[in-house]
Length: 363
Figure 1 (tube, rainbow, N blue to C red):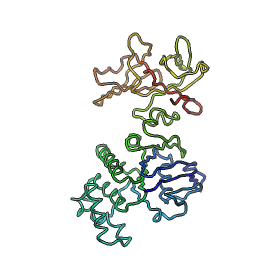
Figure 2: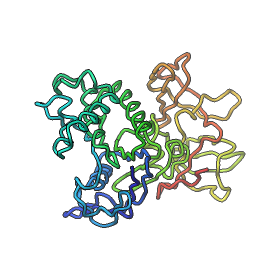
Figure 3: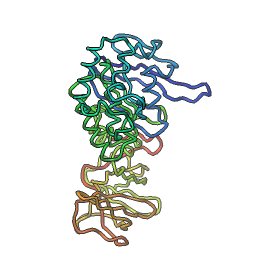
Figure 4: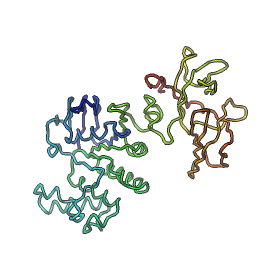
């Protein structure tokens, strides 16, 4: 096991494109850290720099106590699992698992012991004689994990390893990876574009956008206290609702939209009296957008599409030109085309500066 330390790590390509702009953070010894962001944000580039598959333009990378900027990938004591399974089709599962160890000239008894341990851990015991073509997608991914596992590296690097699986298999493999990490305690850096995967797998999450680190924190801290509008809207499904308008204080706070519509804000909204008349982005999570009681100040929105998903109901609303989503408990479903009076739950308002996107209140 080892910690991974990134100090102002940058990747600039020959054409001037900045792939990663000065990433600085530490992956603790034995920590499971997730890099998440949309396609092209630099997360895979950053992982490949840690692996030694991308040259570092500037900055310093430590694995353990060593600076490894110029250390070859094979000498960094890391193991990587790719998005594609990259299994040798002509080899059995056992041969795929043992290939790297045999290549190193490891004694046969030790190879057999490591392969047996990995196979038992990943439930591959009965599949050792099969070839990849005879395996399901989930089984192939477990073999790919096992091939990294048998090497017993200091650091595991996983690059979107579940993206080729269907939803049910992805959910099962997330649990397996978390369970595997708990048993091994090995430092793990995991890349994904799927924010649900990031929230469920990461002990801490690094959110990236356009080559820059936006925020680093635990999943719930990111969800409850996003540093900026991008993090707020990227994490959470359905995404946070955001309305832009002028905050006004007269018999309570309200948000006046450009077309004259008005949204009453919660009595405990974290607004400074000096902000009266200031244009802000006001965000509210779908679960905090609620039907308003008859005596409660609210606003009317038209039901557009209703999505019952069992334990909850997503109600897509039209509010003028704005689209909103409310997450409601199951019950009698509202009908498309009908008006609903909605309100924002107390303690649920997020405020962002429209120009910078930075959160004005983070709790």
